[in-house]
Image 1 (spheres, helix red, strand yellow):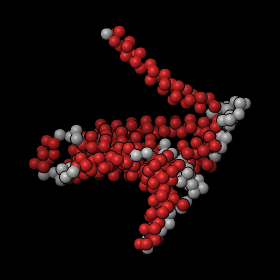
Image 2 (image 1 turned 30 degrees about the vertical axis):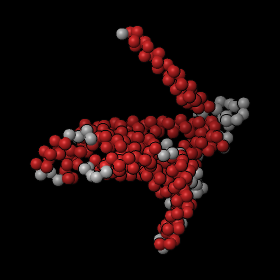
Image 3 (image 1 turned 90 degrees about the horizontal axis):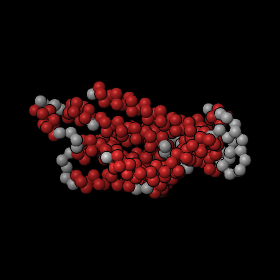
Image 4 (image 1 turned 180 degrees about the vertical axis):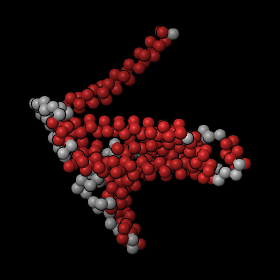
Amino acid sequence: MSKRLTAFYWMTVPAVVLFFVFMTLPALQGIYYSFTNWNGFGKHYDFIGFHNYANLFTDSNVGNAYLFTFKFAIVVTILINVLSLLIALGLNARIKARNFFRGIYFLPNILSVLIVGYIFNYLFSNVFTIWGQNLGIHAFSTNILGNENLAWIGVVIVAVWQGIAFNTILYLAGLQTIPASLYEASNLDGASRWQEFWRITFPLISPFFTINMVLAMKNSLMVFDQIVALTNGGPGRATQSISHLIYIGGFQGGEFAYQSANSVIYFIVIAIISILQLKFLQGRESDM
């Protein structure tokens, strides 16, 4: 038995080495550089302690990026989970061509985020504006991505449209684990559709609801591709997310060490939010 376990351990060595080289080591290097003033290009730098971290809390650009990212993540997480749950309930019903519709709703998940973003950029800039002008709808006659107050809505629309697909599949998997006998018993007791959902369906899929909420929030907090394809952080800095700010400042703005400190704080924030979500939602699971 020990020989078999030894063979399994050796099989994991290549994966562990690759993960350490391409994931763990760069992360440790980023933490190291966050205590320096390195610009990412030169050979010389000095250790400056927590100076970068202190400056983050007084930087208005960093504050605006965090504010936008949190607002975006909350709205997207709520919309994705509400809409994907409704779609999953519909796709789980006995409808014609059910498997066909399941495949159609999953298609956005297999498309590249950047390609989807560029397609919607064209739609917002050209197609929707022409439709709005022809129909006399002022709200659609201008490109919302060029409006400082409305650009974030365009990013939300694209993120929700593509994010719904994966969450719908997870909810469908959860719905199919519920025994049909429970619904048959509830029908005999005269339960309404709402009572069935609230007393049977939702409590039994609450673990899937928990993982969907955590994944949707984590992915939304890490939004980057949609920002690059749709607005590139504009107009001005109206839609600049934290990850986009780290990329632009670190690799193009000569702020490698400074943005490394920002990425460390960013990681801690995402980890804390995910842990709090899991504890709160898993606590609700036990109460149901």
